[in-house]
Image: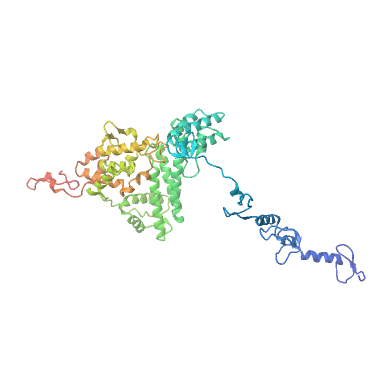
Length: 556
């Protein structure tokens, strides 16, 4: 070292080179620190390798899994080394073909060498008499699942397991057993037991709220509990139907294009407020289906307006409304009425300045413009519903009652057992003032439907019971009844219209209206729009009072 020139600024040692501020040791330490950087693997200050970008320790990783390897000579970690030794010791099994440790006694792997558990030989079932595997109590699995006492045994075990069983639990178990099959009733009783065993209160209302499933269906257990508790006054009905209706309205509003959506949301709120005021006033509030129709029409109108390049309700003119109404000519009156209601609301709330529907006319046809069936078509349908045993009883019932008695789908849907008079072979349909006598063909379809209902073992009071309604007391859904006649390729409205046209044009329209419980003006549209010349008086005896009435062909 040369002559001391100055002291080191870090350690105070001698610095023998002119122009340096650090001694040799501090300079070497600074150079080493400058070559280091934080390692991405361990986070320590290390010299990073150029190929991996990590320190030397973190750069040694397993070639199989990527875990760190401590030894510089090793290429596999500890776990991968053990697995490699195991794979090397394994051989393909001659029986299953999978790699494994072959046993010397069998030459197979361990799974194939172990003896399999033998099953009990099949025995003759005490109930059905067939040779099947035994399930219990001398019965096969199918007969064991159908045992009617299974729900009650499960209910007794549940009552014995609970420390403080509710007093209504026994009746509830009987209600579930009567409304479901034994296997499904046992499943529901098991779910009920899990609800009663948790830490939450077992009050009927709280139990009903916890039993509901998330989503559009509340589940069979919640439906059964709701029917049981509401009938006995133990709880209030849930708002499941209201939540479903709110979801339907929400989906219709979300389908409206975004620039036009705020007005649709305001119109929906207006309809709900109007219904609430009608309920408080005691008048007839709008049903959920009515609100759905209004919002569906508004959605279709908004989509058509948006397709024409208009993103504001204020830009809608009469041509847009005419194009919208022309898409469905038969629904013109109803769609125009809904459009008028919406634009009146929009004008009142300053969303638009001019109502584009003010000068439009519905132009509704005064006569009947629907489709009817010919006599040959009616005969073929009658033969199908009377003689074909493969036809579903619900299809035959709705078809015969609509074809012969002019019954609507709503009347058949709400037909209950107490509306049937077996002694007189008559039924009560809807709001008709008198019982409807049935012919032998119609009565046979009613009996067939009653036999089908007995096989369902349900407590529902309606004649048409479906899989979704047999556990409750509500009628079949509108969607189910509207599609019952789909296999026949016909609709209930066409059958009813055919029958009403035949009756109105051969009888007094007022008598038909009185028999069907309809308004006299409702049957006038089914009258023929021509005069029957055979029913007019002779030309020589005609006078001023014998002028033909152009609507029904009767003299005034």
